[in-house]
Length: 244
Image 1 (cartoon, helix red, strand yellow):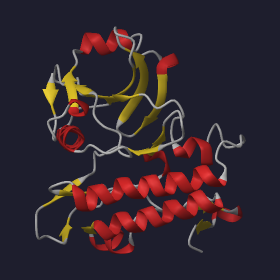
Image 2 (cartoon, one colour; image 1 turned 30 degrees about the vertical axis):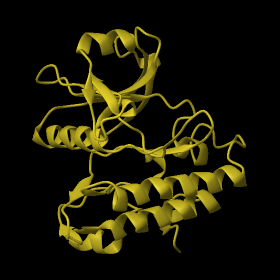
Image 3 (cartoon, one colour; image 1 turned 90 degrees about the vertical axis):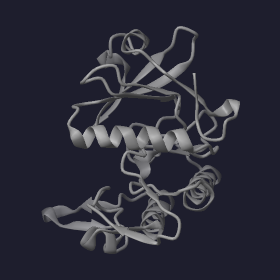
Image 4 (spheres, one colour; image 1 turned 60 degrees about the vertical axis):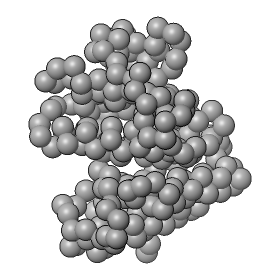
């Protein structure tokens, strides 16, 4: 067992073997796949003691992917908040074996309810939508002001907000996160994140600060409240942003 930041029982996570995760996910079966992105794939699994987990399996291990894996494990090991998806464990067994283990969220992502497989079902009434906004904001507040060093997420969006069995929101995916030293207000860095959610000063000049997360969160709020995507393709190939 490994104790993360805080040193209490809720901070316990552990190292998994590749074999354990292979068995838990039925050999990383397509039937167990929850989603896929540029980083790799996420699989549902069940451990030998009955715990339901989500396993992020990174696609390829170049220096960039290795850095994102290390950043996410470091950040997840530090944070403990009811609205942030914590670290259940990880695996770094071989040259191509980089996996991160989380608790499984049965209601999947906010994106799936706004624009995906559950969009036609009325799961998100106004009370739940407001609760998701408030809970996500509380998680972001913790990252920006309560954990040390402060953390900028850099990829706040609907697919990075997961929903538990009670539709409580948990912000996830810290692969692009930046740890901000004491007394530093902003940094200049390579642009990471998702088009439609990026703050203008970050998208154009690479200036990242807490304000960039606040901008992304503002876009997310609009998306939750009015049901439009951050960028929509209209007839004739015209693109319309949610702020217009």
